[in-house]
Structure formats: structure tokens, C-alpha cells
Image (cartoon, rainbow, N blue to C red; front, side, top):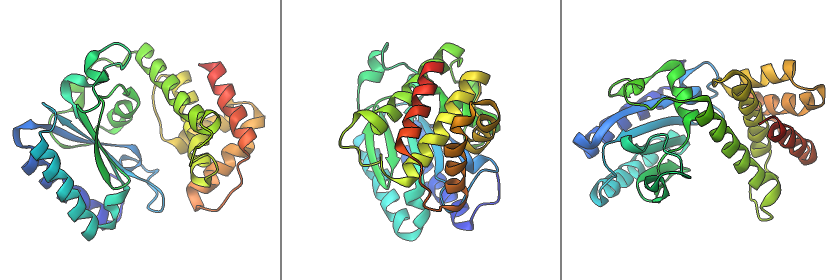
Length: 258
């Protein structure tokens, strides 16, 4: 793990203790992914990404206890609100929403994001698992590769298309988007498109800055300016101006490639 603030390490330790106590035998493991596991972690902007795998959906009592504990942690450790934690059913991992009844249920898994714990559908996203497998950092439990289904190129391609669909909704289709004009979101979208295109080309996942470096070298020069602006924001937090039309053009280019 890269050097991270002591409060982040303390949060992960407290979280591990809490999850083990609350879930008991229902817990399979806790797995880190994202920038916390590699050199791209930026204390000013990075989230703390983790996956909790369970044997069964959380009971009402387990959900309430975990919600209460997360609220308590948020009062004592400000990093708690930067935590992005998915609680996923072992039997529902990488299940496609389009093909399985399990995934159509909206209460089988949980998500803690922006300081709120909520119930949600099961996981059809291989991208976070590919990210985890690069470093295989498990806080608790067996290696994820021991129970994960095979992540085929077809599964990955479908996930990349879904990710582009989410971006299209915010950048173009949703007239009431609250993110479209936010500098942070435009930078995030730009770097995410870079990573999607890298994954489409290479069949694997790397950090957003690494994917952006590849994109600057390998993609058409007309996208270089917004990629460099997004990298600038990611590094410094400066209020850069990423033109919406240029970002939409980048999105359309990515869709044509997939």
C-alpha cells in the first residue's frame, strides 16, 4: 500500500473490526481497489474504495448496526465520507443485470457512498474486480480470485459500454444533471473515458493517470488538451476549464471505438 494519511489507515482498521463484528459468519472478505492500492493515491481528491463480500444479504439488524457504526466513524474520522464501499453477495458477483433475476432485485447488496448507506442491486461490474486483482489487497478473507467468476473479454466489453452509458446520461441526456457543469466531474469523466479506451484496447485496467498518459500518446491529438486539463485538475485541484463540447466529442469517439 502507498503512503497514505494515518487517519486513512486508522479508518480501514476500525472498519475491518466493525464489519467483522457486525457481519460475523456472513462475511466472506474485505477487498481494496482503486488508488488506495497504488501510487496514484492523492489525499486531496482520492476516494477509499473497498468491496465487502457477504454470503447472504444483510439482515435488517446488520444493516442498522453497520449504518450506526459508519455514522459514528464519520464523527471521529473525516475520511469516512471519502469511503466508497460496496457490499456484494458472493453468489451475485459479476451477474449481468440483463440476464439474471438476482440482479434485478434492488435490495440484495448495499452501497456506502457520500456518507450514506443504502441498499441496491447486485454487482455486474468486472472493472472494480480487475482493478483489485492488479494488487490483490485483501484486508480480510481468501484471495478474490478463489471465488470470482472468469472475467472474459465479452464481460469486460459489456461493462465498458455501461460505463460510457452512465457518462452519456450525465453529459448529454439528462437535462437536470447536477454534475455536468462541475469541474471535478468533467475531469473525472475525461479520465474515465481514457481508462475505458485503454481497457478496450488492452483487456485490463490501470489507474486513470496511467490510462491518460497512454491516451495522450495513442489517441488523436484533438483530445490531448482536455486530457491534460483533466490531469492538471487531478494533480492540483485547480479550477480548469474543460469545454463540454470537447468532452462530448471525446465521449462520442469512445462510443465509436466500443
